[in-house]
Length: 211
Image (cartoon, rainbow, N blue to C red; front, side, top):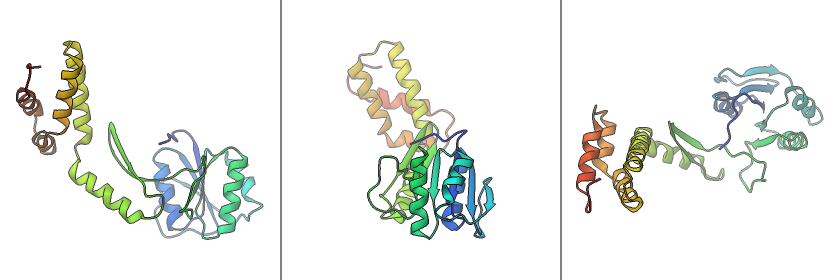
């Protein structure tokens, strides 16, 4: 989890993988893609530079763009090695599209991500099963598409319980019951105008003192 807002990301490689990386990081950062040719894919708002740097020329591009992250996305392992080494030399983070093994401390993994503010879910398989990451992401979207609404509702509930000085153990029981209640999830999924009514019913059914 890293915020690349207002940073530069340098993508080395203009194939389908480079395009996907450009779109992914372009949601936050200024992206520059350097490649001798570009796939017929969408690169978002990335700046595409037609150039064919060799292993010795990668460092110059890193110095020129001063990236926070370098994405090595070519089909040339030696060139990816050079890009990763030059990035580390410059103090930048590294994302290697062809690296499916153990990662170094400054390696960046790009998981399958679901965002429903303020909730973010990231699923990663260490590069071994991208299809599984995608499947799990789709399953989460299908089952918990209102996670952001639930987080907002629970956050407001916690503040209300704290303001009313409800016992901490009782607050914990209430919040746990709320986030596990399928009827409330369904109400949020349906976009019902007053899910608070379902929330009140959940709390009312709890044993112990009424909150």
